[in-house]
Length: 308
Image 1 (tube, rainbow, N blue to C red):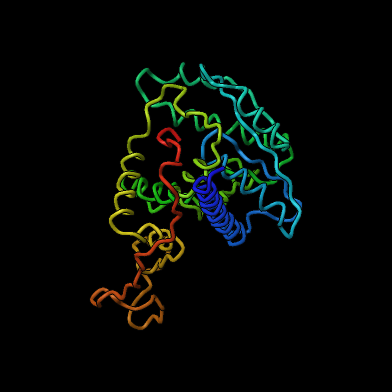
Image 2: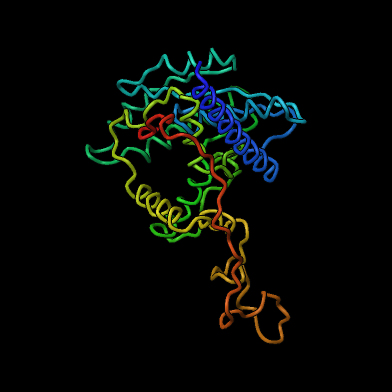
């Protein structure tokens, strides 16, 4: 091996270790902050075959080795019988990992094709069907938590989608109770940046399964929001981080939801503390550094992540 190749290999390993450490740290912080995993938990890790769920599984397996508590993982994939679905990929991958897993086979594809008119997006119905099956599977497996692979960017995108199209100030919570009230759903990647996940999946060369096998049109509204946020991220480094911090620093008295704050009771003699009137004051915004930690590596060594 030439000296140049050795140096390149060392640089690759250094950048991989640095990126993995950041993903472990961000995931560990989210788990701690929201008490996502507790002693004796049995975590059902939902594995779709995409970059996010592959990364989530690997990071959780890594954290399990050093965690101060004992918990178990079981990977679950739902084979929805889309034409062309490579049903051998995930079983082979999980067998090689040596992790407990279950492949659930349900022909939701035929149901969706029957119910949704041609040309319309099938994602909404497909998602509801998939959610119900996963809840049932979690109960059958005795899982105490259901882990989904949504990351920080998914959460922020959902916030803007709800504001723009739903008239709600609502995002994705890192932890919630399932629709049927029987399960706790967690999102361990809630603090992780999508750009980090893409790089990590790129380096790990996961056997990615495309999510367009059903032929459904992509969610154009979400894609538009993603493009907007990516443009902001390039033009104003640190803005995405600041927006996420805003989700953790809500001031109900300075919004307009009278169900969250008793505006009707406010008068000069009420003694209600609402943070004061800053409407006519200059905002004191914190200085955000333009220097965002990044992983640098030779672009020639990257794989094409267009379809990741």
